[in-house]
Length: 251
Image (tube, rainbow, N blue to C red):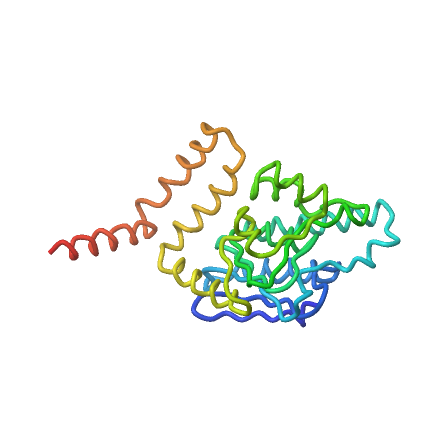
């Protein structure tokens, strides 16, 4: 599966393309984890976009679940948690560009990304309860954080599938693009992010992720620890460049 993943890096934007239907099966999750970890060590990457060649790529292989016992089910869930955790810990933004169905584990993969853009024909949902299981890759709590507790409960309890515009309305995705253009939209956003300071974006992602559910005083502590590290070294170069630019605009 790792060899099948398409990884392209251009202009500091990495695009990781899921190559086939049900790319989130056991082998696929492992390959994605390995690829994401490798990208995390590269200095030439400022953003990662997850996209797909197949409209059913953002799906697990349900047949793998049919005869699972508790031990293998625990390992299956643990692998999903590991993949989501890797994406969240990468030192650059991760975006999902979804054109087809992102259901069950695929929706959880989208939730693990910092930003999601959906094509007009995309569908999303945590459908596990319809098959006698439950979200196992972090969906129970990530969905609630993204769309609110009541909406998340309704979606998970009913296994409902929502279209792209509904996903945008409830905050599951940031934007909806015309069908087939989600990747282009994600690249445009990545280019805008690339104009900001790399160290700043890395620090913002780390603190925003860690502070998400903390008390305000704890979140403030994370900021106070991270903020000074952007000063007093080569890290502060963007600040001086910005001040110089602002001064020239006033002349």
